[in-house]
Length: 523
Image (cartoon, rainbow, N blue to C red):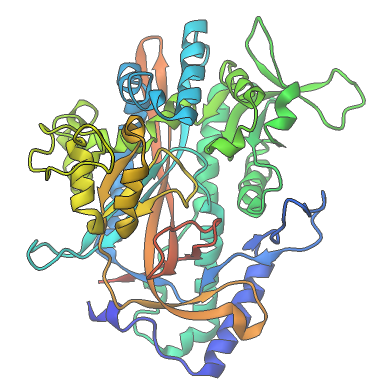
């Protein structure tokens, strides 16, 4: 652990200043960029006039080589697992449907109702595409646990798994700093063989290409569904450029509001988007794949008409990335249910890596879990409640300092941590408990430092902090039941590191909690 405790290497102020200059100019030269912040009162111009570099770490983060290799190996098992879960309609109905989360979570309920309506109508496209990211933290068990340092899964993302393109740019940035300065010979770890390659742009694009080829219509385009006034546009554009320049596949970008004019042919069920610059008013483009970089949060659906648009897209022949089924499969409740005894083996055999998947999980349970699941829960009750709380809620109260509570939400900033949990449980209506899970907190090794660089003036943008780093592994899966036969192609395609200050619970880059980072491997 000495490599972690002594990190980052010591540098002189002028050396740090020089590295920061090289890093920021490299970032601005290589699309490691965000659009500047804006307010609702002052939206950005239609054509950007400026950009700022995305937040990044000046040094790569040390990660044990064995754990990095394990995370990459696990991705194949997770690709297969979530593909199979998404094809199990009965399971998703039970967990996420009207008998489960959909009955107490309005957003999940809307998604599930739209999926159910499409099934009643008749699904015309059996293939699903998932661009996934599985996120991990290093976990340092206590002395009483007696285990060694390992990785534990934070969550599995099935929709809008972002920052793949920018993660590649940060990896290249750290390689550039090493080549240009040798990091001033500040650490024996900082040498080229310890900085693993990262080709996530091509990897993520390859999943979209595979789905486009499976659709098989020359001249069709891939649709990117994006949020209005998207600041993280360069992360998306780099994948778009890869598709067009390397594979000659055009991309159309539209917000949900702009897709109000989309149509589905009633006979062929093909999806068509009006062409923006055609001289023929009736000219449209056929869509092969719908790639959602929006649609994962309730704010993406400000009106019922947006849910109707999502349903229209899903009812077409275009391959969805993700489908509603696959988006529901990525719910936190599914993650919790998979940890219950006997559930994982329905979808993954020991030969396919079930043991390593199981070992990557922390303890978790539903707030509505009964006494049979958690027999040792203490006999506590909510303030003002007429009935005893379920065992899952009582356990969450008793162990709150070691827990995080998670709702069925993506995008960061939604979780409840430690000391905030008891008061939150007292305010949570009993009928909403099934929408939440409790998860034991991962305990990263302490004493790891870093230099975090955010857009600013000179030294104001550079901050030295004790840090925690989260490793994400990307993968894709193209799968479905075609003529009663299951087809499944999958691949692990790259990685991401996000680093935050040690006292910060949330981890999103777009929400301002973390910076982008890369890996230096430690033996």
